[in-house]
Amino acid sequence: AQEMELVHVPLETVTRKIWDHVPGEPWTDVESGAKYEGTFTGKDATEFMLRAGFASDAEDAVDYLTQIMDEIGAFMRVDSGKDAEFENNSDAHYQWIHVPEADDDDDAKEMDGNGKGVALDQIVVGFRHSYGGYQRLIKQYRMAGIDPQREAAMEAAQ
Image (cartoon, rainbow, N blue to C red; front, top):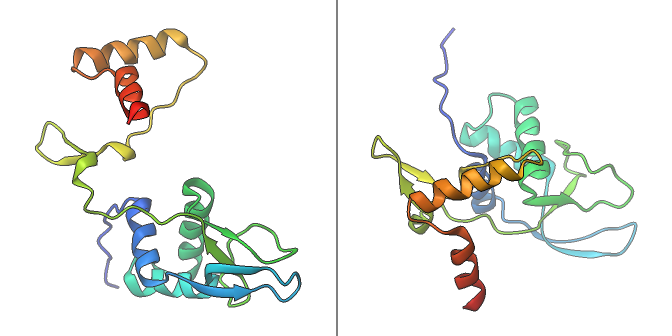
């Protein structure tokens, strides 16, 4: 048996690849008559995941697509009266909610200690109701020469 080399690919990158290859098309829900743009089937997305090598089998592909739908919120189920779950089915229809950002967004990259790029949108900081922890984090930003409050004010002024 040949072993597969595992490589970490961020879900945002996988999402963009899916969108590039399965961008969707107009679809009308027979039950409600509602018309949707940018829709695709669960089967189409699952088959792309397998062809691209992002999943080893259909079950893994469905797990990843469920995670993309739930955590990133890039698409949603639009079938009337169906559970909002991801299904590997040609009768399960999903609509893109937002277009994933392209991989080559160099403006959002910083350098880590090894000279490798780290995308700022991939850094997640969780807070537990600790104002002191928040203040320590803001202090670290300021020591690094970044003032998040000033940055937000400048963005709002533009």
